[in-house]
Length: 408
Image (cartoon, rainbow, N blue to C red):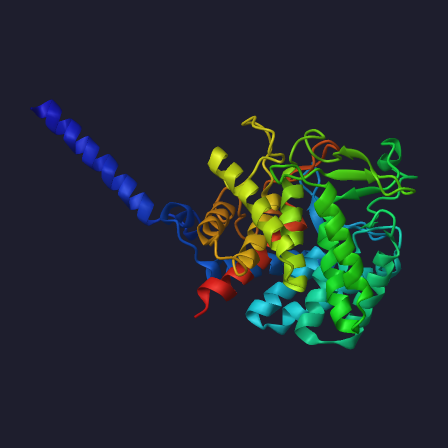
């Protein structure tokens, strides 16, 4: 009896300790356990972290991109960097949320670092760079200067469009690693994200040419980039003389026939935007099909943070938080266009992203918000690190969530 009584008392003690610890877990961990989200708290957390990051960036007069293998800040390339618009874009979203003018002033300051890149006609990433920065800025301030930057950038982007292929060329193939792949007119699924700039500039100028090019690119991509299960190839190489497909390959995925996780997110987001601007149901259908592919994979793996490629199932393989942030931001917008509610899955994505495992504490992670993203495994570049675009789409998702589901 004494032994049994001792065991009972030990058990009770353990139970009390566990109960006490559960009641005193920090808020971020509670999100996972209670299956609830405190989005205003998370946005407040983002403001604290990015205040520190902005101070460091101002001191260095540079834009933070990621971390090096040694854990130091890796800044964007001042000559041109496809990620340079995301940090000021994050600041614009914090201004949207808080109405604190310090974020507006910081965003304006950092985006001037790359304003001259609006004239760059050798790169397809002008939509990423300028829509996320100056595009957000124009929506909030209506400054004519921002509008003119967007128009110039859009003109530079459409110079890469070709009627025969019906697409905007992604990469020039005479320099760098792209020159070694034998491509002639490569187009990547990422390019769907640059179309929003064109749709927006068509509205700003009342000139349909930008929208016409965006639709042509979206339609050609719809025709050639997707498999029967609605997963996407990464790279389609076209014959510039005939417009026919030469190759279907990958640059950043596991294999040519695999589903690179961030690529699927780019497609989802891109076709959601296409429906926003055109109301063409084929784009809505495509976005829903891509969403179903992603969600089905999340259910299979019991995780809303995907491996860097959906065809990789090695438990030691890196996961890509950035793919999840892009996905959930797109799903929140898509949820407003369809009768099939994505709210349950949106909550799951944000709960996973906001867990202690993925969301950094204030003052850690070199003041990036999120951990565990992947740039490119095949290039041995930016593996299991924070990335400024993961932070951008996370903040955008939180802001969208707050507008749609939190505010009464």
